[in-house]
Image (tube, rainbow, N blue to C red; front, side):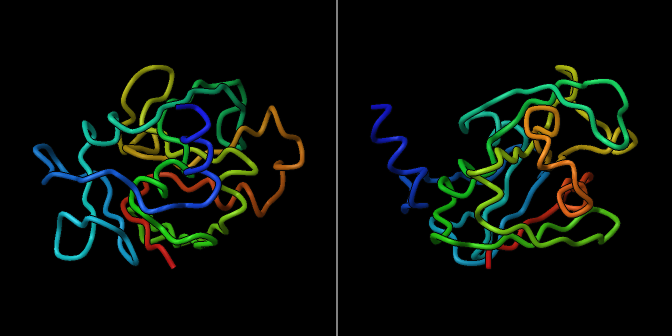
Length: 163
């Protein structure tokens, strides 16, 4: 089973995920070439739906948190597999304040980017840069401590366009 999961993650294969309509407040909308849309050609997620996807946690410091903080969420690469994004896809991530950043495919698997919804095991409010943050393991990978990767660590994420 582990080998099959690794093969899926390696190639952004079409998923077995069929997403129902969110029962709670929508926290993320994924648009573009996705499989099994649940919302007019897009996939809308509430928090409970994100929690059903593969999970990970890591602690890291950031330019806005001087002390290590624990982030928990969905590996970004696993999210793209679940929505059926094509291999080599680039993401356009958009925040609540309309900040936008492109994230290339290699960041997702190679660098361990994560879509986090918990900070220190608690949901993040908008005031705490939530409800969603794309974060990198900056402490584990010093090569990520660059202006480029810090700019891709987008907080208050509201949508992702798969390109």
